[in-house]
Length: 108
Length: 128
Image 1 (cartoon, one colour):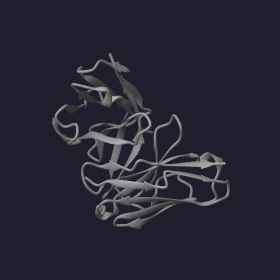
Image 2 (cartoon, helix red, strand yellow):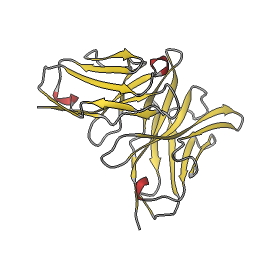
Image 3 (cartoon, chains in turn orange, yellow):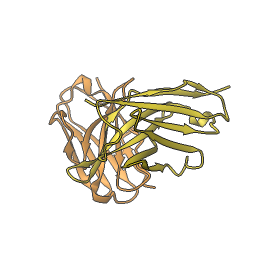
Image 4 (cartoon, chains in turn orange, brown):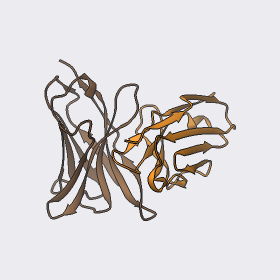
């Protein structure tokens, strides 16, 4: 199965700054079929990005995804306090679909 | 819009069977554009794909089980009730987790996948 490694584990930034989150796959993700989710405390995850770089419906353009093959990035610009959450990447390139362990983003 | 709601016992004894049901509203489990999925999150850990099921029409279903759970897991679909279910037998403390039911859209821009609808999750604890 494809193992996804997310880094850093925790990221502490200030409002207005830019966050760069990494997701590295143990093998190439077919068709770059990779998604990113945001999970706030006590909530279910919410889809942010699919196909590595396509924003889901209703997601502000402060969130952007990039990358291909084995290296993917989620960038959040102009950070706001409500961006505090855990961010997960998930691959749909091959079964079983797998997730990374998440990056916790704290806005202070 | 489509909503998913998990239901089932919050406490299960070791060696017994964990049974959860997901009720779908605002949409149909008979839709051929989606997988209906179970995902779990052990306390303090990452998300794990448990399994999913796909409706192929006329009582023809196509389940998939995570190989790590395949010997203990059954996922079913009930189109008459617009529900899908998970049964995980012989549970241990390692099965303690927050269980989500979710919808996978596999037709984004034609062939991309993502979980676009999640239930709120239900906590299951395995303990005597």
